[in-house]
Every structure is written in structure tokens, then in C-alpha cells.
Length: 367
Image (cartoon, rainbow, N blue to C red; front, side, top):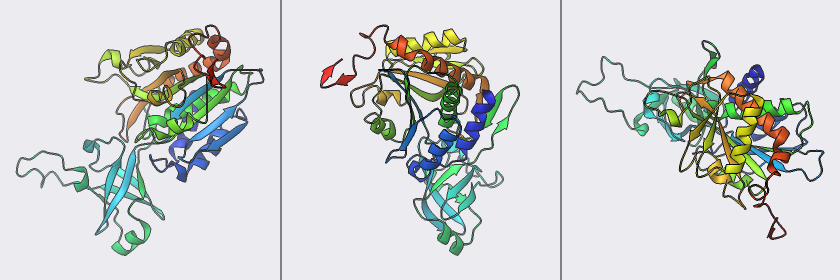
């Protein structure tokens, strides 16, 4: 399964999905998801915001519906000015730390793809006045090396750009790459669905590869009106243990999936995820995210009529940089848990309808 997850991630990584620009390649995302899941889905659609929704219908009559969400959009850049001499100015899309920008390599998606590099002042010339303050984002230019006429012909203000970062296997099962957030969770979902294609699943499964999470969360909110489900799991990357990151809010790489307990997450839905994790023997850790999770669960839980939601995560280091790091075994644990939930969701969610399912409104009344 680890190789499957890496294969799917590698394909998704190569598709430009900077937040706000998902519609440009949403059809390619849909085709990729269908290609790697061995016929598990009977139907798929693209929303106006660029989310991709995939549907599996159970053969079981009156089966419950499980929603699995991971956002397909990534952080990135947008061209804000063409400055001359081959330089352009960019604005951030999503949360980007200026400390990572110096000499960061980017790819701009204009009429053609163009490589560029954030410029840097040599240390021999820098800080002559003892000022170590980072320049503002707007003062950091990207050097394309292009002549002015060619640059203006190929690039326009408003074009998206992505950070480039190779996918490299490190020691053990560690991997470094750009765009793990959140395409490694998308890949983990699709790997679980590929596995589920080999067996009978007793619930309906809707997969939402949502748009806009890094900027506005609109993709999950919009899709909640299309994909009415009895329960949901929102998947996103979370903090791996690093210096200054509390133990209770993080997990060490290699310790498995992360399951959140929060004021936002539904108790019964989270209990189902925890029981399935124990049942399939997947490594996992329970973490506390008291007020909110910072994931699409915060939206899915309350959008439309509300959907009971749990949060499942892959821990990564160096989030929102071109060199994020994860352990393939942790992504495998997430995929194993999802497969186990799919196999058992219908029966487990019906064990106590007073806690799960009563929010599903039909005919104007709570059922």
C-alpha cells in the first residue's frame, strides 16, 4: 500500500492546484482519481469552485453514506507585477513564511511554464548596517532570466505559481517533498478506495477532493450542499513532533495516524474511527485540538444541515515549505483506518442512532 500511496501522490503533485486556481486542472484531478481506484466509483463530478466529488454506491439497501474529505488545493503564489529586467513580483496564496523564500525555486503558469528563483543578496553585501530584518513579501523579487518582451508575452498579472520541491526518499520510510499538504491525504483516501474496490463495502462512499481550504474553505462548504452524508472524516496533515511543538498537539513521525478530539469533532464519529483503528491494528495517536481543528471539519460539521465529523491526519514536518517530510508508514496507517471504517460504517453508525444520524433531515423532520 505504501507504494500505491506514493504513486498516487506523485501524480497528484504534478497537477497545479494552487488555491483559487483549482478549476484549471480539476478535470485532470478527477481523471487521475478514477484511474487509480480500479472502478470503485460509479460517478464523479467537478464543482464550480474546482472541487472533485466521487461517488461509490453500495449494493446494500438503505445504506448509510460516508463522506471522506481532503483538500486538493495547495499554497502558492500569484504574479502581482512584472518589474522588468526579467524580474516579477509575487503575492502569497495561503500561509507562507517569508523565511523560506530566499533562493526558493518556483514555476509560473503563464502562456507557458517558466522557472524562476527568488532573488538573494550575497552575504558579502548584506546587513552592512546590521539590519537582519527580513524584507517584506512585496520587496522579494523572482528572477526568471527572461528578456522583457518575452516575459511580458508569456506572463500576465494574476498568473499562478507553485513552489518546486523534489520528492526524495530519505532514511527508513521518510520522504521529503513539496505539496504534501494536503495531497498526501488525498492519496491516502484514494489508496483506501483502491483497496475497497476488491471487496463489498456496505455503505455509500463519497470522496471530496475539496478546493479553497488554504484560503477560504469554500469548497467544503459548497460541497456540503451536494454531498449530504450521515457521517464524515476530514483528512489533513498535522504537526509532527519538532522543537517547540507540544507533545499533546503533535505526533512523532512513524507513530502512525493522528485522530483529533475537539469541540468541533463529533464524539460518536470519532469513536467509530478510534475503534476501527484498533480493530485493524493501525498505529495511531489521539491528540487534543480543543477549540477547532484548522481543517475542513470546522466547516463540514456546521454547513448545510450539519454532518457529524471526525478528523484523521498524517503528521508532517516543516509544513507549508517546499521541503515537507512525512513517513510512508503513517500514511499507510491512515489508509488502513479508512478502509476499516468503510467496511463497518453502516453497521457501527446504526448502533446508536441517538448519537449519529439524527441530524439527517428528510421531509422537514429529524429522522
